[in-house]
Length: 317
Image (cartoon, rainbow, N blue to C red; front, top):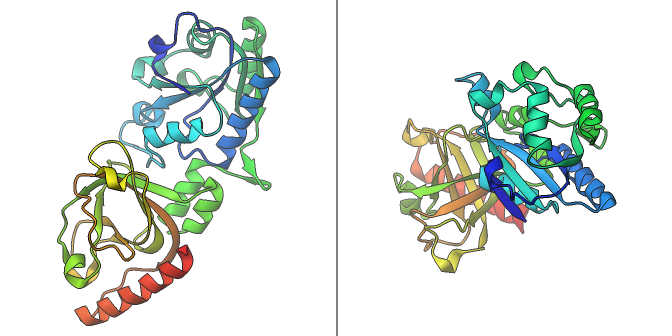
């Protein structure tokens, strides 16, 4: 798969293609239906398929300070899109100047002049151009003007509408089961392992303290079953590359020790010798086991951790 950052990266000799457009944050089941249809249409026409997406999130530029919580990193989003069989992903830097394009300017500049659209597939709620002036009907009319077909796909799965906003809401409630259903996979938080208080190590359950980028969508405080995985983007010992361990995951401030900072910590079951400081890792969230609790003693905390680990083992085996 080809990856382009900006229109200038598109080869000069790039021919006609079928394009699908969106932020695709989360690459959820609805997004996958869009991309799958674009790939199928490209196959019917004997042309390559291209995903056009944006970074940063348009809301960050159009409404400064809103910062929608991100469901996927740019790297993971591209990886997920590549897995759907597209031929190229074009990430467009979303700037204030870019946001001021009229619908016609956007179509001509992005879809026609550089990517030579023969077909365009979007979600049925697609809006584009300055102040979201364009919709699906606008796109169809511009398709007639510039000689491409436009299709709209419902963002639904099993009859239910799916959106990135719905997924963020469910994460805020700690409903990782509903999130996994909407995504078609566990929700992932990525980051770099940093040194924490090292209390887990002293208690016999050493954790990877994962520092994620700002505005990452993190589930509600609590204890979760899940997995810890090394990500090969530098800083990871070669022996850990591609490894994935069942893990007990804690999100929150650790009320027993009266911490202030909110953290994501993952204990890889049966592994007390992992050296992950400075490594880029991923934490995949399975079911939520319980809320965070304040314990009267360290002994009571350790007893509960043992019970949590046993439940994680059962759920991930």
